[in-house]
Length: 503
Image (tube, rainbow, N blue to C red; front, side, top):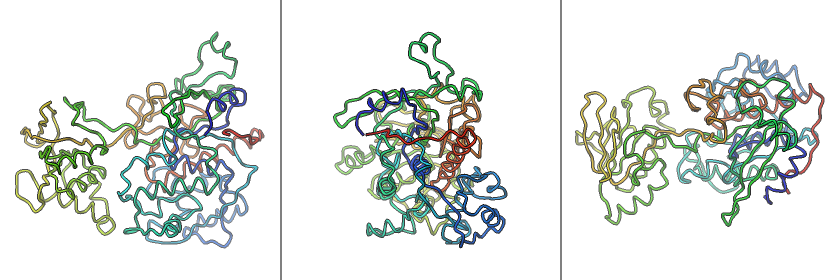
């Protein structure tokens, strides 16, 4: 990307129709739709759902983007609570949840007259958070479920001469696949990577002098925007782009629509206990490799404390256990709790996680078990850390407290989205405006057929921000946004003309 300054100065006069914040799979899929790629029902296809088949046959020759998504989604069931996500997944992977392997019933055409100028801003490499995950880890989802429309992940892996383990792929392959996808589909010109957004606000499309005279207009979701406000105001997006020499260049871009696609992996969750800020307490696995090297050299042989009962914590347990270092594993749930992720995974597909669950079940700090150097503390919580590398842990059943010497602590209890560029970190957009946005418990409140924020017209949200955590389902959000934008342009009969955004 050449300097964002050129883009910013140009767009002050000609606002960009759509700015997408975040450059992971949600954003890539939306860019695919906005670049003029459109899905059509294959005339020769037979969908296993006869009602959906009839609906699709009634609109042969009409792109899915132009159809009534609420009508098509009616009556469908799946593993997402967002109906369009279930619909699109059903079209891409018919019958997959029932063990079927039917081909997609969609065919794709690139129609350049439906191109919508857009700019995708991401703070890191194209592909988003997949580049920050340890590359040798295997995905939870099947490899085929990680692919984006009209480019087979399995075929790509075959060209790369890689194989899938239990039909799952390594995260490094997924990150490379997303970069390849953007290049193969001609999307890269829409992406401005290494661009950090610092603020988004609604402003009047007047001169800077008029804005200063009247003051800034509506804050994001300060109140629900009226239709008139949406048509007479723009979003001002401020931030800076990072260069290879660590220099930064500020930008200010205006947009008619803004789409939030930041994911939820930017801000690791904290326990909120005393001593959590000490230098040996971490909230990501980034320092684990250094700690294991120190253990090998005998610098500090005390156990590594891992807190959490999710898959990230399990990956850390696997890594530490295979390195022959000692680990103390603390988590609040019981090992047989149905809410524990390990009790929801098929054993055949996820043998490594089943192994961790066995360890959690059979090994305790109070008993001698079969797993050397691993100790499990279910239904316990951390009370505090002390500067001399001690941790106080409490049994939630008896209230008993115990103190352990540790070499380091990994707090792996989930993460929250980084929405600091929004007023009040986006709380006013959430389902419960009294609490922070959380992908599982308090997602952004959107219209389920357009993904437009209920509290802010013209602002949209995708992916984990609205509760779609799996790649196979977050793609439906991109379809919904493309459908909503098409309907709006069709109703207002205001065609969008293509112009270069990044030179």
